[in-house]
Length: 239
Image (cartoon, rainbow, N blue to C red; front, side, top):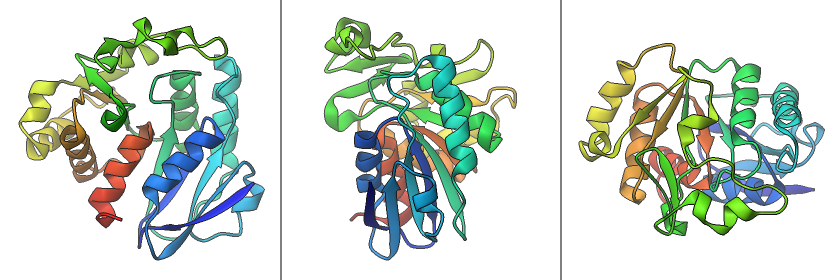
């Protein structure tokens, strides 16, 4: 399957998603007039494109080990376009599947120095409060997403996706101080904390994370489609 969309000027995107629905959703949020953006389940189909590309790695229903290997392989096969690049690992916004393993595979393949991780999608009632994912005001593990018969959410604590001592969390109080304060905090973070997670109550805080992460030099991101939309808005303006 190949799907061509319009993408943002100058900045190219490389992304790997856990399923085709998520790949198309992310691409729709990244899309801007000017340059091609292609979605496919085949890395070969994306090689000849010089625009942005989103690859479906089909990892939603795999074991953790298999998902990690599949994402690593997907990023290894995905060739880079010319020009400035942002890399994005699309995970499920309700943490179904193997989001921790997928992000670890992303980091392994791309050698990312650090990753801004934010699955929140406020427009769909998915927020992060105190590091925990909430869905329409309920803790994730009390919702239907934890009872998914094929790929249930296993944790609502975003930092728990990663090995102990490798993540650090930016709470709501810090985000309320705005992008400048968050940027300074990111620049001063301990360098051994490669996975940076964030509280996020609304679209304003989503935009704050996008603006501050970019200002702090982040070029590797992981999250639902909401963070992708906020990054595209910051870089390219509204559709």
